[in-house]
Length: 276
Image (cartoon, rainbow, N blue to C red; front, side, top):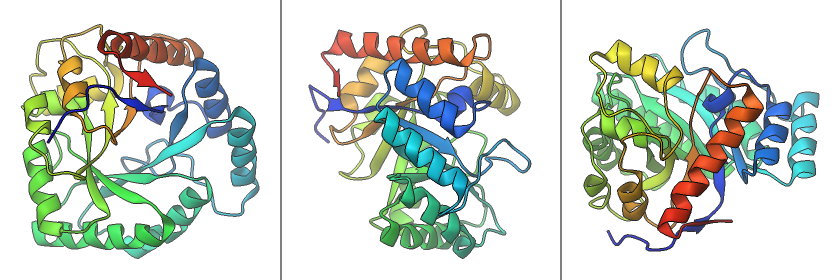
């Protein structure tokens, strides 16, 4: 896959960066920091986890749409659906309807079912469900989940064979699962939907529990660690949407977002990358 020497695209920020902030103030803080788009956690990543569900046509959704319009900022992704054995894909139609009404482009999911046939069938069903809403399904790999690496995500995408299913590449998860930017360059065209950026220390987590803690609370700003972000950005196709995912609990949300945006811009500036 040919790398793009100049990347001109909007820059989004993932909701995990400040998950304690509800959607309307989240949109306002992200816009103030300079971001062009946001992710929204509308479904919990784990049972009982933080999420901000809202129904299409609800007062909460209308308030959020007004905030988006007022700030001139878009919704990039809605998350998060763990594709577990008991998943009922059809039950997510209301979520998809709400996401589409906000203008979201994709829904992020993970592969959490050891029965790969059932997992593939459920991913295909979600991809088909998302198609009329204009929502691509992005499969994110994490070393502690069943689909834990880029290789496994690629194999699952090939098995499902649905044009509305792609891979979400998180720079941290790529590193912690043994992947490299060179692996990104071998992906077939259209198979990578989005990429999330952060940085991390050189030392690998000793266990999956340590990897979970690092991913959720101990990432570093882009450019402040040891991840090969320059090589990753060069390897990503030009049409892949970029987002910063940088939970950094030692800072208040506004300072965290300002740090995330400024750090990403410095990395981009070093490569001649333009975010628009």
